[in-house]
Image (cartoon, rainbow, N blue to C red; front, side, top):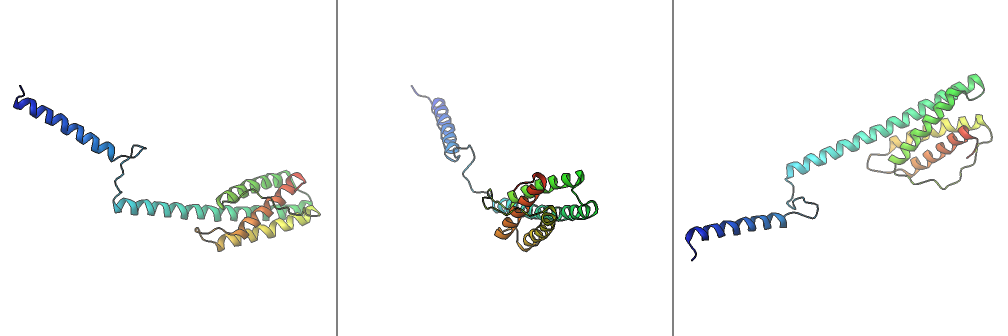
Length: 170
């Protein structure tokens, strides 16, 4: 015979199963709850994303400024020594690394466009300096919300010139 205590026990078991079923239904496949986040948390997440984007853009501009500074130093050194020194080649390597990071931040694909190799090292260094200034100007013109095709093209051109100066090929 079913007693009142057995009924209460079955009821508690049934209630526990129901609560578990509701919790399972409230979760998606990744184990997280499907409930929407509170507005305060959404706002905080958005603020954090905006701050990250601003910081990324500042880093992009700083990298571009460093590229201009290094190419200026290379140009001055070349005028003094009439050749690329070991220090200049190290700076060219650093410029190449920075340009790769800039291209990645600009979300540029591999460059398939052919750029004519400069006729001499002097012309290459002059073009390098001019094109890095153009690159910096283009990056400063853009916002963190946009992608500049001209900035990507400038990055690709400068990268080809650096590779020419480092390896003697385009």
